Image (tube, rainbow, N blue to C red; front, side, top):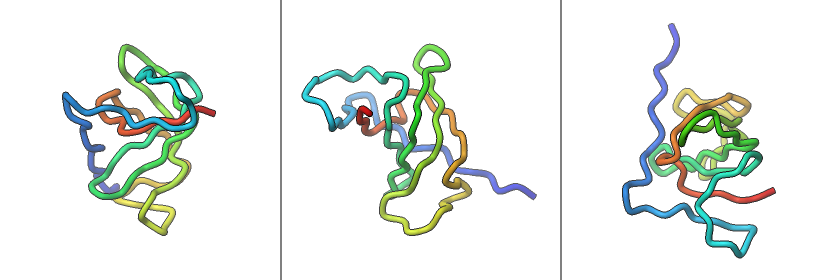
Length: 94
């Protein structure tokens, strides 16, 4: 029996995407960016982000901040995930 994985948290309608690695103030997500999603208090680091449609993205889980394991809430490092832009809390450039 497979575990049902929780949905990533929404950033909210007024939330901004926190950025690092570049001085530009630009909330555009580009192919290859690393983004941060949230599951409660745990940040999920997703690499190799690619646009798959209007406001939708896919990428690969690279790790969990504030969680020492390789799996959290049914998600594992190396899993491919899809998500809408409203789920992105942070981004960085390569």
